[in-house]
Amino acid sequence: MRRQLLIYGLVSAALIGLAILVFELVIAPAPSAPPNSPGPVAAPAAEPRAAASPDGGPADGDQPAEAEPLPSKPDGVTVSALTGRVERRSPHEGWRPVAVGDRLGLNESLRTGGASSARLQVDERSRFELAEDGELSIRELTETVHQFQLRGGRIQVDYQPSGERVMRIESPDAKAVAEARAGKFGVLSAGKVVSVAAVEGTVRLTARDQSVEVGPGQISSASDTWGPLDAKPIPKAVLLKVVDPTRRIVSARHVTVQGRTDPGAQVRINDRLATVDQQGRFKTRVPLKEGSNRVVVVSLDAAGHRQVHDLGEVVMDPSSPVQQMQIQWGQDK
Image (cartoon, rainbow, N blue to C red; front, side, top):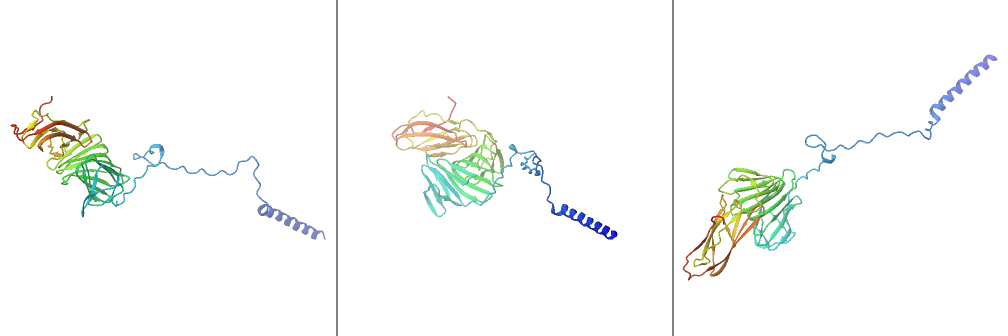
């Protein structure tokens, strides 16, 4: 009898121990943290990595550098602003007025009259302005090339980088070309001469298989007969030397005006464009009508500098004994 009671006791104790173990491991909840104990600590978030500069260091302000937008194929050149009289021409239509918002396509042209101008853009990163007495034609518009022919006058360009895209401006005979991937610069077309004045960025001027780099604050020119001149600092004013006439009454129906300006500058005498050579010399005949004639000489460079010399009144009188009058540049006064 005792032996049975002992066995029952041992079995009961074993069952009670097993029950306690199961309760502690499976059923009982984990003890809560004391009121003042810290909770679980989250792993710190990863800091954003700053964009590296070309030399491997962090970029300015530790901010990622803004990527250049990829160029897309343009669908034309948009007229964004106009002043004065401006006209357009297509291969199948003659000259007609243009309006703000009009879009010009391949092989179309735009021209400005006196005291007129037109602001144009291919997109927000390709803008330019055609100044007075200018003519511009569209030669190529692709994702990589914006090419124009400046038949006369001056254009001011604001061209921002976009991939490998390039801006090209050529002379009327396409023998002189200005090219840039980015920058702010002016281009002047005077007959067969093209000149470039750079404000920002670098412009490559090419003619007769020769090229010159025109950097910020520099100017250069080229033509179909002479290669690009060495780039030099942009002058503060354009040179213009013309001697006032000593004879005011002539019998001839023209007057010959000659003088000197900066190489690459444009010279207009009244409404006539003079030819300027590599040394800046010019000479041209100006027609006269019977009676009083006013002769005004205007010089303009690629930077937009303008110089005006008013020669005053010249009278053409067929009965005058004076056969011809010549106005020429001489020694400085």
